[in-house]
Image (cartoon, rainbow over all chains, first blue to last red; front, side, top):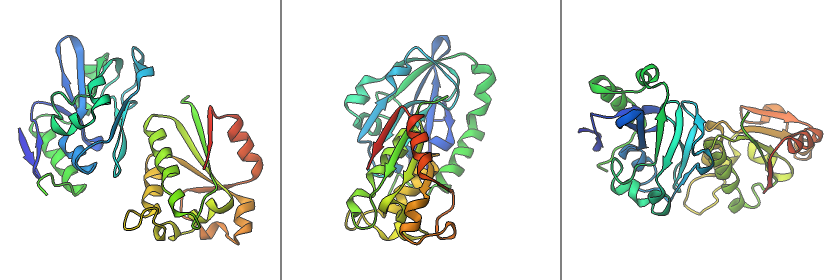
Length: 149
Length: 121
């Protein structure tokens, strides 16, 4: 786990740094996706609503297309698909209790799962490893996010 | 192509409380991958005057309407200003913020006709 500006950023995940989205490869080409602690901070400490794109379930989504929407009084944004694939599942627990994203962003607060169909080709577009953490550090600093404040 | 949404914005500086939600809703729709256009007419056009939205506070002590407006632009929402309402308020293209197209009233009907949802504020 890296600590960037007070934000916990696990070093074993992949990141869409622009959107503060994390991606975790699971077995069988499945990718679990959520929002980082920096996103929670940007949102003012919590999300008031997480709305999964249920009508896209079992549909193909291109990389970058929206899988869900997160809202707070300070922040509105998509949870984009970090890679192309089929939207397999959305976490109904966070839809009914959005505070899970803030309380356990990398665990119970996951938002969606996608069955990647071009993981090997697309994973390079995500930030990962020590270089990825540094890239995300630059983004967090540029956004003026400080989770410790 | 993504589904299109048209938001018709008629509220302006006289009703500050009505000047955040339309932009907020537009930003959400864009985040959901809808193709979103806001059409500004009647008093809504005034919000596009350079700097003016930054002086309108939907909530006392809160964020200016200009912040919500910028969120919508950043999310990819397209802004169209009604030429007739510009004339009503004595505005010209030079008075407006960047990234606004000026269009006639007929364009509103064309946009409404091609949209899956039309919402007026």
